Length: 358
Image (cartoon, rainbow, N blue to C red; front, side):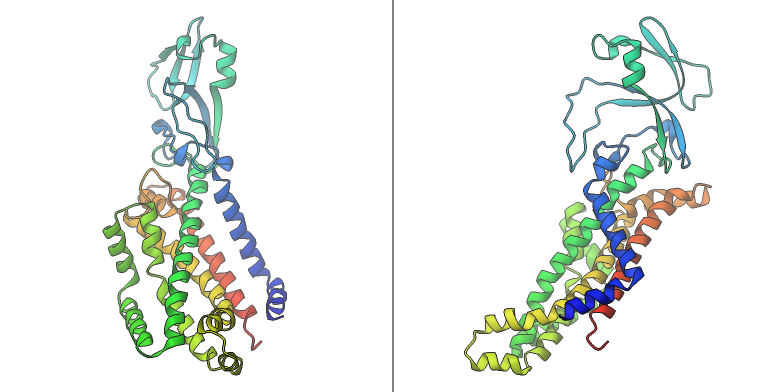
């Protein structure tokens, strides 16, 4: 009944609905990243240095030169390994057996040539024009390596969503377990766990994450573990307080009189009372995890290149704020800000909706 009332309150909150839809949209983009990204190569790492740092809306013709490396099938989750060379061109000339082209940005009149034999056997001019010569449009422009910025942003959303889910899951498992033990059994168990909580609380979170990350090694999964194991403290404190107050309720004492086991009382009668506050704190922790991962990537100890990360993209391009191309750092920064804002707004709305005093 209470959840139904809370849901009705939530439906009336426009900003909560907008935030929830935005979060679901980003989650959908993260799942189907390689199907939505214009550059579906692994990590959207197709470099074209001659067209680096181009503004949004830039377009040019690109000639694709196939290579003899074995081709891998595109994977839904990892994209396809790039085995071809893409050359941005300004001008192209055709002859009977070869192509002459001028690279994009070449200030001279020098034309490079490539034979038709570089393409699959039997390829004619019409085939090359249709399959290997394309005009590519870069909606958000290109980064300093000539990679499609939109594709990097889309695939980078996977890092932010993944770090949030994994960190929140780890913090819930550890925090609920320790908090429930401390609040339910009390005594020496409570003092030991409370001491551990206070020790963890006294250490700056960012320094703790950096220390764990350096101990485990820099990388994708190491960041997940490091962030998750520093966020359980708030969960444990919350659960401990709720369990201590709930176990004094009459219905819990009645269960003890009836001979219910302690495990049954804790799991079936006390922990369900912590569900609403845990939902609220999970939304806040999700936002904190995204910010923390972005900060670690900015410092260079988060997701490692060429894996795209919004924080890493800001790190790579923050100098461009002073070089007349601020969008290279602003776009990933806006992505971080909007997703964190959506989670914080949803968390605040959930807190108000689940407040039984209202």
